[in-house]
Image (cartoon, rainbow, N blue to C red; front, top):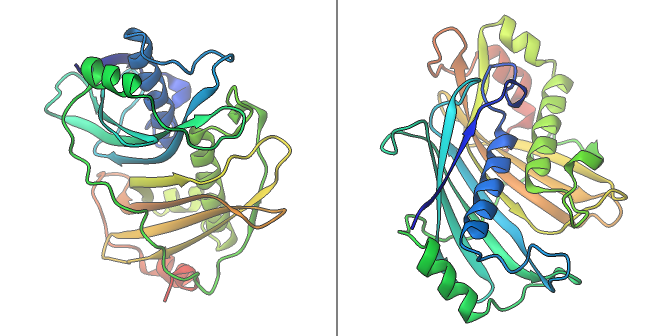
Length: 289
């Protein structure tokens, strides 16, 4: 009952490391989810006349090995459960051998009223049809989004604004757009502390995301303004966790929060390395105590 979509990796989907940009995994997942629903005539929310819509509440992606230009990626997707207003969908990414995934992911979807955005009870017949036609095994233990540590000494506000290209048909920033803002804000913080991407490359290392977990709490549209705060915890030899909050500038309400496991990597060998001492010295004020 697993649904599979196959996509070619385009040149314009890759970043300066030659790898598929993280936000594009989120776009692939959205495409796979809607493709699965459409293939079985399951989705009763796609029409603008529908009173209901599926909204992404939370997503986690673990990157196991990179996708590159000219690769072909196969995405297997299936649903594992339905709760009162939520449904969990899983994804496996591979390049031809399902036993060798290049990424794994899940998305917690919320069934909501289109006019208010408030959660609505999923009709039994909808849940039963999804599970019958696109159901599969579970491997995710549901848990609350982890509580972040306190802000670091240096956790500045980085101003952001929505871009038209990142809005979905409901007029809200899509989940891939939020990830792009998170990564742009993180690069801005690095530049503030003297570490541009070019400087890191010149010193022979990069910082690669191993796992993202993102929770979407409130929508934002083209007229909204918001800001990002980001700080680091759990420093290990070659890894650390970076935390992110995006808040509405008008009322300071929390829109999105995320945590990312980062790995320091030697760009020549692709192997993890110890976090460079001079890098940590410049970033120490951005580490939570």
